[in-house]
Length: 84
Image 1 (spheres, rainbow, N blue to C red):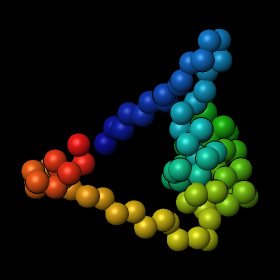
Image 2: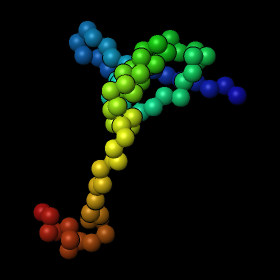
Image 3: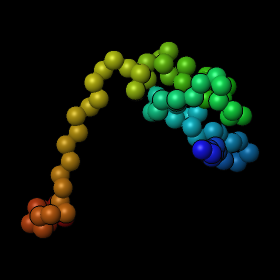
Image 4: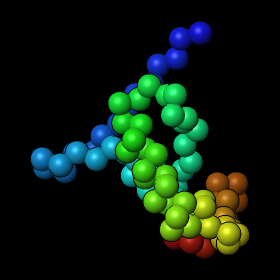
């Protein structure tokens, strides 16, 4: 089984940022890479995840995620009109 992977970069002028590493650094994702992975950017990814883990950001914190309530206005036209 052949698996293909890609790396996404964000460009700001002359500076490029690895999107996966940036999400890991902010604690918005977890990696499932091991040291045996063949990514050119493996070190960046592992360092970014370590920073988030050490700082206990988002997914790595002990706090419960916030409880968010959504109003589905697509089913009730009367209720949707009230929000106009």
